[in-house]
Length: 426
Image (cartoon, rainbow, N blue to C red; front, side):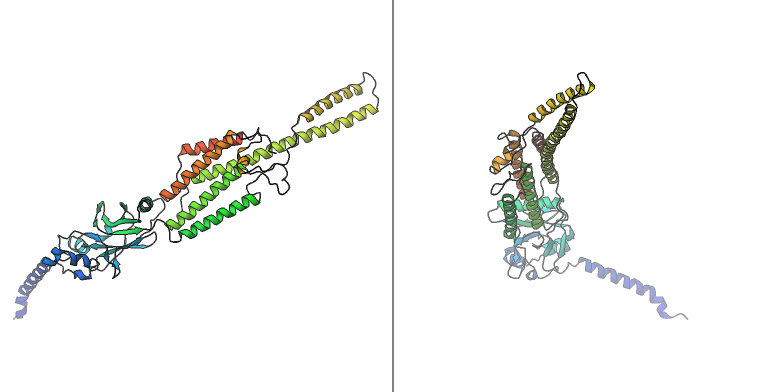
């Protein structure tokens, strides 16, 4: 005889399955229990919503559209009131619970939106507990050449244009930006900006003092003048110092503003290379001219001494008329006359060069103010102004057009070329 429970086993399993399916259907049809709106960072907004007060809706209702609000400032669960690079940013979103848990959206797709710019690569760093409805971002662009770097530069520029540095803040999913009534203060400069300015001014002051008190930016071919006279300023060295200071100041400013140390230098390397080459070539030309003249004079003097010695020897022997010795004597005297004439035609040795003031020193070529020096000085100032504006506006080392770099190179080459016929400064 079989046990009675064996007959009822299929029936029991069928009943259990039906009960499970019924429970699952009941669970699926039961809405997720909403949190208390008073727990949300947007609790004040929920309380002020007249429709919410009458119908007692909750942030889980499908009709609730997400909206960025300032939030509970006193409770410190609120949208960040101040935004700056390298700091976490909190955004309070009314209806975030509904958007995630009822509409089944992915919070990882949210992106930070400030002042009309979407920071597309900065993902949420953390999400609040479901009831509190806020999302956190860490404001750190991944690389200096990313799209977010340019977007942040645009945000900072918009903050500078604003009278109070306040911009709209929100979040976006793709290109869809949530409605927002919140604004935040975007710090256009680091908090320690005055200290950075002070450091740069100190560097400029040191450079200025060394330029006036030492030969750091002065150059002379001959001997230095006796004190209190000083050697003249060198246009090539001054140009090198100009780009050196701008590059250092820009690098420090960008590092402090973006908290990045790997700053792409771009075409700045080309400018630094042109200025360094110009200074080196100018010094080489001056040295070459002096060494060539000295060598030529020394060679003539050595030949002159040798000719005088040989003539004296020949004359002491009283060579007979028509002899080979007499012929050699006549040749040596003829050559001596040519050497003496060549020595007289040599330019006089450069005197001691003295400074006549900064602008005269860099623009004077020995015969007065010269256009090729004036040209390179003007283009250096023009490109320097473009450089400063580009760093300030775009928060990156500027990329100069190839034609501008070529023009700077032509100006530098012209300056170096005209160094060959320049008269020595006195």
